[in-house]
Image (cartoon, rainbow, N blue to C red; front, top):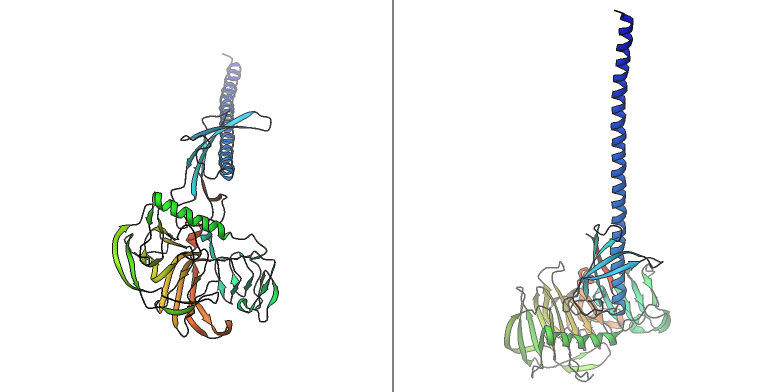
Length: 463
């Protein structure tokens, strides 16, 4: 036997074994790399398909926002039929690259907030779908802390929330939101903080207040449109809310209860008249205080949250839920316009956005002569043709007024009267605390007057 030959054969066998092992390992690695490459390619394709589907879903949202800008009351994509509504999407060359499907939830009665759910997919990958859900709404005037059609004077101190004056504005405080005036310049008079009268910029300060949030001239707030909104409130109440016709007496007292109900009374007799002077210097000899009432009924708030009274209204109690009280007499006549009177405290069960009260008066929102020494008002208040005010009752001085909400007043708002415009208090509440209810910006009271007819984005969520 030739041992050398045997050794060479064994060595060749070992080499062949190693080659086979290494070859198998290389094949395994190459196969794995190929598989990895295929997986990554597929993942890339899926990612691309998802991105395209997402972009198509967003295109659907933008399309319907555009549609609402041209037809703000159409939530059926011009078809008059229930959805979903499917539309194709083409590129700049007219080639169809995908589609989107729209599910649209219109606003409930009294709300301006709609929901759009848009689902997109591409022609190349029709089973890869992405959805976007947005809420859009027409902004209401409740996003302001204060609005007036007149000139205004805000003294030193911290001011929270948006403020707008269609007139000029002396603003000596500090702000954390937009402070706007529709005027470029105006004649500032003694009642506005200037003595003697002089021409001032639309917004100015005598205290060197920061100007960061000042904007003027800005677009005016249309109080004429607010009057139209009051007529709409009446129509909504007649079809989906509660409508109270003329009382045949002095008006109605609405007493809110913490359980979500409210009690209705007819105001039969008023207290003896007293002499008071309003913000326009007009002297009134009348009464806004209740002496006696007649019970009508206790009932739950309407599902729409809208109540309209074709008469004067007094309010008090504890509000649970979202409700708007409109008060007006139609056809509109300046001599017979109605008021809303804050009879006693009107408060929320909780200040977490679950409760909101809108008070929309054709003329004034009044705090009466016999108002509590300490008074709390939780509400977004609108005086369309008059003012949110307490008359000047000579020598009648109360202690503290707390407001949580919003004040929108055609004329000057006033509940504290001072001698000479800046001296000691001679009538009204000697101190006041006004806090803007930030929940109103996103959840206004139902049917509350709108700031704009254009829809704005409220929330966005990818599904």
